[in-house]
Length: 205
Image (cartoon, rainbow, N blue to C red; front, side, top):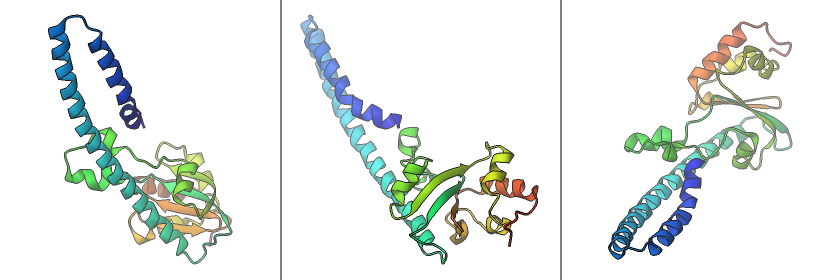
């Protein structure tokens, strides 16, 4: 998010620099500073346009990924638009620019790689406007064992063990009122390890 704030703050920076130059007393210094300002503004505009291109590619890429996720959810036999669901993400998806596009470029800084869709319910709901979500949980290795066990306590183990990381066709599953999306192998293995240490849930099939 900082990258976007920096971008929109640039006009105010340029305004302050121009005001400083015009109030400078020495004519030769004023001319030199003005020439440098024109050059900096030109290079900054080129850089801004370049960033806008990457951000547009990134946003379109991220929305395409979530469109595919939504398609897989809606194609599940037990999915219903009338139900409210708890969304569980195992890991979190790599932004399109970070995982796909930037591999083909030498642009790897945070401003370009930053994801547009945050790991929170409102962001996920924005990408899934026709799917009703009650909550959203994102599982990673930093979560405690008790927290992981609690999140998956009502889900049969085989549902989790059959998952594969995105973009595998088995990366999305629905069980009762829960939508589970597996993004990353490392977090999936962590969840499996935790679940193997607990008894079968009462709802196990």
